[in-house]
Length: 209
Image 1 (cartoon, rainbow, N blue to C red):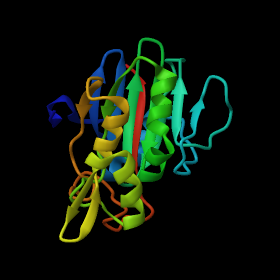
Image 2 (image 1 turned 120 degrees about the horizontal axis):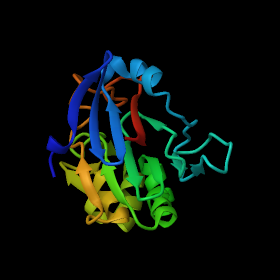
Image 3 (image 1 turned 180 degrees about the vertical axis):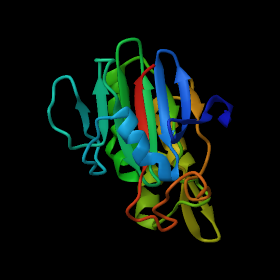
Image 4 (image 1 turned 90 degrees about the vertical axis):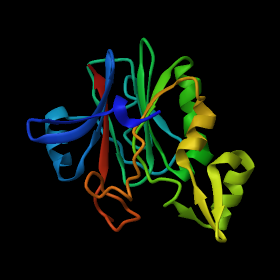
Protein backbone atom coordinates (compact mmCIF):
# COMPACT_ATOMS: atom_id res chain seq x y z
CA UNK A 1 0.00 0.00 0.00
CA UNK A 2 1.43 3.41 -0.94
CA UNK A 3 0.28 6.92 -1.72
CA UNK A 4 0.04 6.49 -5.50
CA UNK A 5 -3.69 5.86 -5.09
CA UNK A 6 -4.10 9.33 -3.47
CA UNK A 7 -3.55 12.31 -5.76
CA UNK A 8 -2.60 15.81 -4.62
CA UNK A 9 -4.91 18.26 -6.43
CA UNK A 10 -5.68 21.96 -6.52
CA UNK A 11 -9.14 22.98 -7.69
CA UNK A 12 -10.57 26.52 -7.47
CA UNK A 13 -7.91 27.55 -4.98
CA UNK A 14 -8.48 24.50 -2.76
CA UNK A 15 -5.63 22.00 -2.30
CA UNK A 16 -6.35 18.49 -1.10
CA UNK A 17 -5.44 14.85 -1.42
CA UNK A 18 -8.09 12.89 -3.30
CA UNK A 19 -8.89 9.23 -3.80
CA UNK A 20 -11.69 8.07 -6.07
CA UNK A 21 -13.22 4.62 -6.15
CA UNK A 22 -16.23 5.23 -8.32
CA UNK A 23 -18.84 6.26 -7.46
CA UNK A 24 -17.28 7.65 -4.25
CA UNK A 25 -14.74 10.41 -3.68
CA UNK A 26 -12.59 10.87 -0.59
CA UNK A 27 -10.76 14.14 0.13
CA UNK A 28 -8.26 15.16 2.80
CA UNK A 29 -7.60 18.89 3.12
CA UNK A 30 -4.17 20.48 2.95
CA UNK A 31 -3.13 23.27 5.30
CA UNK A 32 -4.30 26.81 4.76
CA UNK A 33 -6.71 25.86 1.97
CA UNK A 34 -9.01 23.90 4.25
CA UNK A 35 -11.60 26.65 4.75
CA UNK A 36 -11.78 27.11 1.00
CA UNK A 37 -12.54 23.39 0.66
CA UNK A 38 -15.39 23.67 3.14
CA UNK A 39 -16.93 26.57 1.22
CA UNK A 40 -16.71 24.68 -2.08
CA UNK A 41 -17.96 21.27 -0.94
CA UNK A 42 -20.22 22.24 2.02
CA UNK A 43 -19.99 18.99 4.00
CA UNK A 44 -22.17 18.15 6.98
CA UNK A 45 -20.00 18.19 10.11
CA UNK A 46 -20.41 16.94 13.67
CA UNK A 47 -19.62 18.21 17.12
CA UNK A 48 -17.01 15.51 17.80
CA UNK A 49 -16.61 14.15 21.31
CA UNK A 50 -14.16 11.19 20.92
CA UNK A 51 -17.02 8.70 21.15
CA UNK A 52 -18.25 5.62 19.32
CA UNK A 53 -21.46 7.38 18.23
CA UNK A 54 -22.31 7.21 14.52
CA UNK A 55 -25.12 9.50 13.33
CA UNK A 56 -27.42 8.28 10.56
CA UNK A 57 -28.10 11.49 8.62
CA UNK A 58 -31.19 9.98 7.02
CA UNK A 59 -32.93 9.36 10.35
CA UNK A 60 -31.28 11.45 13.08
CA UNK A 61 -31.09 15.24 13.35
CA UNK A 62 -28.43 15.04 16.07
CA UNK A 63 -24.99 16.30 15.13
CA UNK A 64 -23.03 15.12 18.16
CA UNK A 65 -20.79 12.08 17.71
CA UNK A 66 -17.80 10.84 15.75
CA UNK A 67 -19.21 9.21 12.67
CA UNK A 68 -21.67 9.97 9.89
CA UNK A 69 -23.68 7.60 7.71
CA UNK A 70 -26.02 8.20 4.78
CA UNK A 71 -27.75 6.35 1.98
CA UNK A 72 -28.60 9.66 0.31
CA UNK A 73 -25.77 9.88 -2.16
CA UNK A 74 -26.44 13.56 -2.84
CA UNK A 75 -25.06 14.43 0.59
CA UNK A 76 -21.47 15.35 1.43
CA UNK A 77 -20.09 14.41 4.86
CA UNK A 78 -17.04 15.58 6.75
CA UNK A 79 -15.09 15.16 9.97
CA UNK A 80 -12.33 17.24 11.53
CA UNK A 81 -9.07 15.65 12.64
CA UNK A 82 -6.00 16.98 14.43
CA UNK A 83 -3.85 13.83 14.55
CA UNK A 84 -6.60 11.20 14.74
CA UNK A 85 -7.45 8.85 11.89
CA UNK A 86 -10.30 9.46 9.42
CA UNK A 87 -11.78 6.31 7.91
CA UNK A 88 -13.95 6.38 4.79
CA UNK A 89 -16.27 3.36 4.31
CA UNK A 90 -18.75 2.55 1.56
CA UNK A 91 -20.75 -0.12 -0.24
CA UNK A 92 -23.28 -0.12 -3.07
CA UNK A 93 -25.94 1.76 -1.14
CA UNK A 94 -24.32 3.73 1.69
CA UNK A 95 -21.27 5.68 2.78
CA UNK A 96 -19.86 6.25 6.25
CA UNK A 97 -17.01 8.35 7.63
CA UNK A 98 -15.63 7.91 11.15
CA UNK A 99 -13.19 9.75 13.42
CA UNK A 100 -10.83 7.28 15.10
CA UNK A 101 -8.81 8.48 18.04
CA UNK A 102 -7.65 6.11 20.76
CA UNK A 103 -10.82 6.67 22.81
CA UNK A 104 -13.11 6.00 19.87
CA UNK A 105 -11.20 2.89 18.85
CA UNK A 106 -11.36 1.44 22.36
CA UNK A 107 -15.03 2.42 22.49
CA UNK A 108 -15.64 0.34 19.38
CA UNK A 109 -16.44 2.92 16.70
CA UNK A 110 -14.79 0.91 13.90
CA UNK A 111 -16.50 -2.30 14.99
CA UNK A 112 -19.82 -0.45 15.15
CA UNK A 113 -19.34 0.92 11.63
CA UNK A 114 -18.53 -2.60 10.43
CA UNK A 115 -21.80 -3.93 11.87
CA UNK A 116 -23.81 -1.11 10.33
CA UNK A 117 -22.25 -1.35 6.88
CA UNK A 118 -22.07 -5.18 6.82
CA UNK A 119 -20.30 -5.32 3.48
CA UNK A 120 -17.88 -2.53 2.67
CA UNK A 121 -14.60 -1.28 1.34
CA UNK A 122 -12.62 1.35 3.22
CA UNK A 123 -9.90 3.96 2.82
CA UNK A 124 -7.59 5.42 5.47
CA UNK A 125 -6.68 9.09 5.58
CA UNK A 126 -3.56 10.57 7.13
CA UNK A 127 -2.99 10.57 10.90
CA UNK A 128 -0.12 10.78 13.34
CA UNK A 129 2.33 7.95 12.70
CA UNK A 130 3.40 5.30 15.20
CA UNK A 131 6.88 6.78 15.56
CA UNK A 132 5.38 10.07 16.78
CA UNK A 133 2.34 9.03 18.80
CA UNK A 134 3.70 8.50 22.30
CA UNK A 135 1.04 7.51 24.86
CA UNK A 136 0.94 6.93 28.59
CA UNK A 137 0.98 3.49 30.14
CA UNK A 138 -2.71 3.54 31.07
CA UNK A 139 -3.59 3.83 27.38
CA UNK A 140 -0.89 1.34 26.41
CA UNK A 141 -2.27 -1.24 28.80
CA UNK A 142 -5.76 -1.10 27.32
CA UNK A 143 -4.46 -1.37 23.75
CA UNK A 144 -2.10 -4.20 24.65
CA UNK A 145 -5.12 -6.26 25.70
CA UNK A 146 -7.21 -5.61 22.57
CA UNK A 147 -4.73 -4.52 19.89
CA UNK A 148 -1.27 -5.82 20.82
CA UNK A 149 0.13 -5.26 17.31
CA UNK A 150 -0.71 -1.56 17.58
CA UNK A 151 1.64 -0.94 20.55
CA UNK A 152 5.38 -0.41 20.19
CA UNK A 153 7.99 0.18 22.89
CA UNK A 154 11.20 2.14 22.35
CA UNK A 155 13.66 3.17 25.06
CA UNK A 156 11.03 2.74 27.75
CA UNK A 157 8.45 4.83 25.90
CA UNK A 158 5.25 3.50 24.33
CA UNK A 159 3.85 4.42 20.94
CA UNK A 160 0.51 3.71 19.33
CA UNK A 161 -0.32 2.78 15.73
CA UNK A 162 -3.90 3.88 15.13
CA UNK A 163 -4.03 2.36 11.67
CA UNK A 164 -3.06 -1.13 12.84
CA UNK A 165 -5.84 -1.04 15.42
CA UNK A 166 -8.46 0.01 12.87
CA UNK A 167 -7.25 -2.54 10.32
CA UNK A 168 -7.64 -5.22 12.99
CA UNK A 169 -11.27 -4.16 13.45
CA UNK A 170 -12.17 -3.69 9.77
CA UNK A 171 -9.99 -6.34 8.15
CA UNK A 172 -7.04 -6.07 5.79
CA UNK A 173 -8.94 -7.51 2.82
CA UNK A 174 -11.40 -4.62 2.63
CA UNK A 175 -8.70 -1.91 2.77
CA UNK A 176 -8.07 -0.41 -0.66
CA UNK A 177 -6.12 2.80 -0.02
CA UNK A 178 -4.03 4.45 2.69
CA UNK A 179 -2.76 8.04 2.76
CA UNK A 180 0.42 6.89 4.46
CA UNK A 181 1.72 10.23 5.73
CA UNK A 182 2.22 11.32 9.34
CA UNK A 183 0.36 14.53 10.19
CA UNK A 184 3.05 15.57 12.67
CA UNK A 185 5.96 14.94 10.28
CA UNK A 186 4.48 16.82 7.31
CA UNK A 187 3.79 20.47 8.20
CA UNK A 188 3.85 21.28 4.48
CA UNK A 189 0.53 19.44 4.20
CA UNK A 190 -1.20 19.03 7.56
CA UNK A 191 -2.01 20.64 10.87
CA UNK A 192 -1.01 18.60 13.92
CA UNK A 193 -2.10 18.97 17.53
CA UNK A 194 1.04 17.21 18.73
CA UNK A 195 3.16 19.63 16.72
CA UNK A 196 1.45 22.62 18.35
CA UNK A 197 -1.53 23.40 16.08
CA UNK A 198 -3.95 23.47 18.99
CA UNK A 199 -6.89 25.20 17.32
CA UNK A 200 -6.51 24.10 13.69
CA UNK A 201 -7.89 20.95 12.11
CA UNK A 202 -7.60 18.94 8.92
CA UNK A 203 -10.84 18.09 7.11
CA UNK A 204 -11.79 14.67 5.75
CA UNK A 205 -14.63 14.89 3.23
CA UNK A 206 -16.63 12.15 1.52
CA UNK A 207 -19.15 12.37 -1.27
CA UNK A 208 -20.60 10.73 -4.34
CA UNK A 209 -18.40 11.25 -7.40
